[in-house]
Length: 328
Ligand code: UDP
Ligand code: MG
Image (tube, rainbow, N blue to C red; front, side):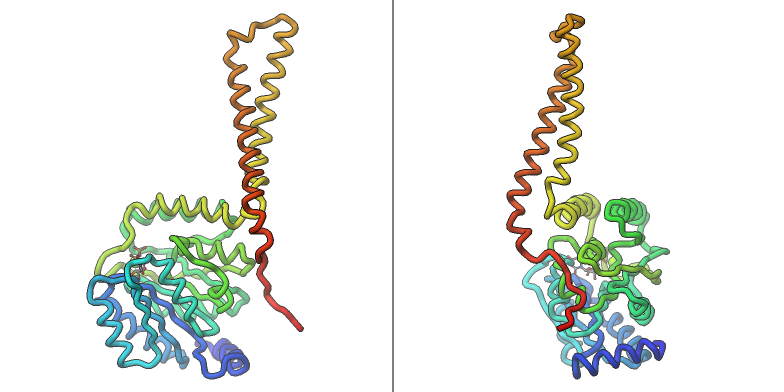
């Protein structure tokens, strides 16, 4: 690790956090018994080279293989390891969420347990953070995954980047580096782990990315099937609604409602004038009904927007900002 960042990490720590580790590594895992020992070895090696102590939080997301025994064994032999075991499989988001809550470090790294993410990237990610970012997301530019995964994933990343306006290429990379504040603030539930950069961005954190080395899965199999894409898009809708429009639902529905209403009104007013002038008979003008349809849809949308405003009224009274500094 370059001296500058090492120094930076040290000075922050001595001032603010005493003997706590500077860096926490959070690993969610579900049935990864073969991979974990190797992962731990390479983490050890990387941090030894950096000359940094680290805290490792292993979250066993309800594994049904021997993963927990492997974790227990590691925990017995190493002081810097915390192990959290879920009662059943609650999903990667839940696992990350508890890991984030427990992380003591000033900086937090997440990576997958399956050896697809390379611990050797950690110093580089921390370095990139230091160049004034709050979150650095790994970018698996060259991916070692089956094509059934890489192509939809590309599309998915493209759409997400366009809809959210965040110019990164790989939202769902397991390998990420965060400043502590980020993980303590964002709320990763459901399957929102795919959108952590979006959650952080909307809270005002500076999100960057860095190309990282990726590897094929060595042991076991992927835990997410084809359903990941469908769910991914539903989650994208959720995230857009809950981040962008939660405090102004009328802005979303109202605009489309008004547009639809105006189109319908224009059609029907024109037809009515023609009818008044005796130029047409409305009984054989299906367009008149189309106009009605637009008007009804418009009114519906506006009403939904207003209902949304009523429902989210309380939401507006709760915290909806994120403070970066507070000098007293
Ligand atoms: N994972 C988890 N809970 C789950 C599914 C996955 O903790 O319900 C972990 C898994 O063990 C791995 C990481 O999340 O460490 C990424 O999963 P996987 O490698 O299956 O995803 P892929 O690489 O296929 O996207
Ligand atoms: Mg994987």
